[in-house]
Image (cartoon, rainbow, N blue to C red; front, side, top):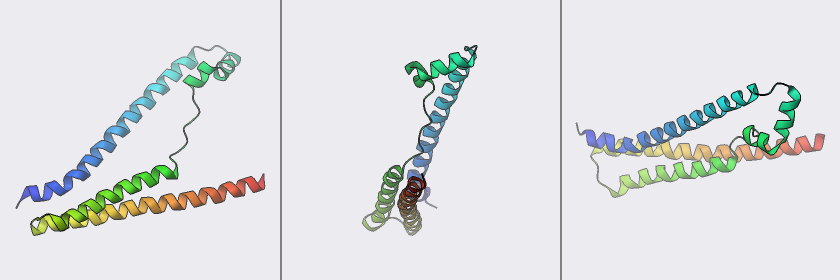
Length: 143
């Protein structure tokens, strides 16, 4: 059995998994450092009034920022387009390069799965955008 014919098509998936894992770990470490720093900072205040005044200052806003908004549908669109292009590239490569039969099948199936994931992300972005607009208009009309 030709291992290169199987491992080469799987390499992009392994690379994506490693990149996502490394990014996730770095965000987790940054969040943990920030939480530790905020915990130490809060321990230095003796009264609620001091803490309240500090949080209203520019320094307080720097150390205790507002929670970040979740990723917008636009982020999902960008990711969906990238994944869709990678999947299309995998499918196109099966047409222009010669692989043995097994590698061709693996790359074709992987390409279809990646294209489907990209399309799912794009559909998810459209649905999220429409729902958020609908909910926003309902919230504004009820106020």
